[in-house]
Length: 289
Length: 278
Ligand code: SF4
Ligand code: SF4
Image (cartoon, rainbow over all chains, first blue to last red; front, side, top):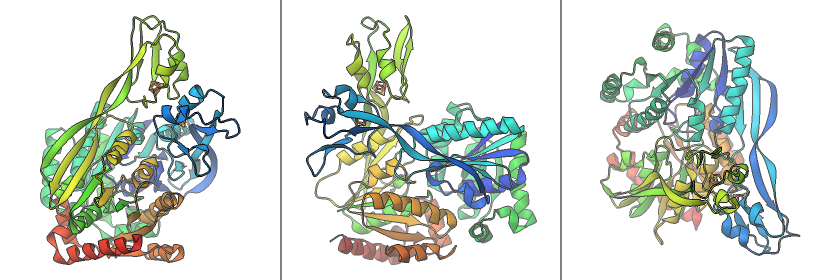
């Protein structure tokens, strides 16, 4: 069983569209949507929910106003400025900012502070025609610390081992922070989806710096090549210098969005050429593995 | 006035809008709070005026005082303190959140703090736009302290535009918290709609006035319009798909710079937002 992450650095390059196509091409797999902050894979895989469970990611502080003597020590010691004096003049923890570090509990002279589990989202398990999907829903404004991603991946891995699936396909998150590190750690290989724009190239370089820190082999898909053919050449030159294979070059095709609106992938368009391009992503990728 | 430009989904054109609005509203300060992937200067193409390192306090354990009692490791809520009995006690840099707790619990006073560099703050300026950009180092996991630092450096009295990180997680809360108005950039696709709904939950909970910009407004369906009507949120602008805008964007040139029409539109947009805020 091998774990593959599809990633991009910059959002909107077509990462989830690539995953949705691969979901139809690759046999024997489990899907994991690691972009819990904008979980979009469910939109194009027709999932039927099998089960969901609340997910809690650590603790949040709570101040008991009856016990609080307003000494102000917790407010001074909280490095995250999470403790405020509210309109009623009481000490209060703003739960968006609280990191659950417990320092306030430690310093409070009258034990007015307690820490409680805080629900930060849902873990969902769904059946799809393309294999089962583990996806999360991070409640808006909650910390995307990567723990939820790690949790989802573990669930996916357990199921893949159980079902003897050959692959786990992970739809990664944009950026390079904890959520991305969590989706890259321990994978066997990565597919980076780039587009020929200066921003996307900049972001791809940062993500590939990260994957090489983790010694993860990477192949590149250049999406929307018609935006700027000369930047396509630049990506290719750079990839050659980094010894990274180009897996496919995909043109802009208005039908892709039209089909996405009907919750379908580019494969359902039924265009041989387009389907062939997505198949070549996978075939070329198998070679680098 | 502080206007934050956010988008639930990445790649909808948030930075294009933020820069175009900045050019139209100049003189203005633009904050690039997308510190994981700061792209604003790719579109502003301004020379760097200044750069400062950004550090967080990081615990260092004095081996001469430490007697391996493990109290620090027991306390640390993130399991960042690692104790190798009799050998070494140290904090893992990517995991530590600099809460300072281990220092408070150590009975031997063995822990002190040293600054640890985790990113840069870059200053650029062109076309009367002063850009302050945060950039975390590759491999750093936690972006929040740097985002907060950018907001501590806001110049007084200026108009400020913030290019937020994508998504609807906590970093977006940090970068919209002080805003007078939030512009949400989206696209008319199921992905765009889904992520817009998530972003609206953040702005609702912060009770911020919002407006929507639909980018590539003619590529998809009309569900965004329906939502905006239902929720009574103004659609401030629609930008149809244009291969010219896409190509210029790919080279780092925003619409307000190459097109008089779009510069006018963004000036109108800015005045429109000012009116709403007042
Ligand atoms: S737990 Fe830590 S972050 Fe939360 S309020 Fe207390 S001191 Fe602040
Ligand atoms: S400063 Fe806080 S987060 Fe860092 S090691 Fe000490 S207790 Fe853990």
